[in-house]
Length: 255
Image (cartoon, rainbow, N blue to C red; front, side, top):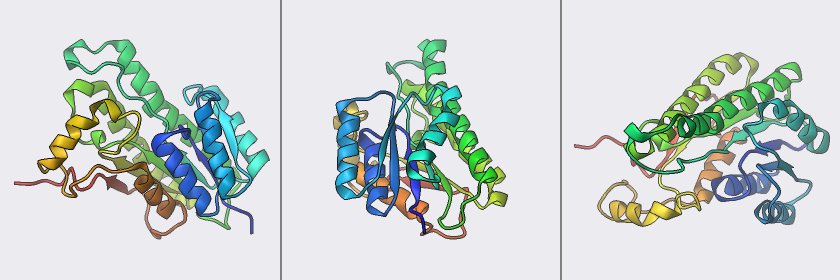
């Protein structure tokens, strides 16, 4: 039996890196993508290769949609048939502020990377797997969106809109790909400690101490990695189209 193969976008650091490492520990060959080559990307690749081999780094901007088909060909030529696509790459707002001041440029930036790129990379992957099915491992698309797909944060409005749209991308592909035996999931992380969330983490810690989350702590990227691995390896059989909130119960309605 061949090894399962995963492509993880935005995988040089943070949640993406944790996902890549978790998949490698579960026997996956991993193509870890980042916008450009960097010490962080090479460090992640080195950590993957300490776990097992082979793996690969894949440099390229997810917003370069015309490159997606070539990415998939390159990964499959190097590692084998891709069985799991993890759409993790994303951006936050460049400046928090009043939604009345949001510029079209800032809005389009979030939509391009957080939504449009996810849609078209999922489309390219789906075309490959529909044309050339894989039967010896579960096949899945796992999208990393955000709790802000549901929860409004008015000082990051363009981010929230892009993540809500990305959640719908997950639903749409789940509907289309069910007949192809390809599962699709939407993971919505809450307060996860990463480089991207670091500037505001001290504020969230205070809120957590006051009951903002049901589990009284901030999450870590490795916890998202464990959830992704469970889905990729088929540990939640007979499921697709699910939204999984990795948020310590943050969005549970309370009175």
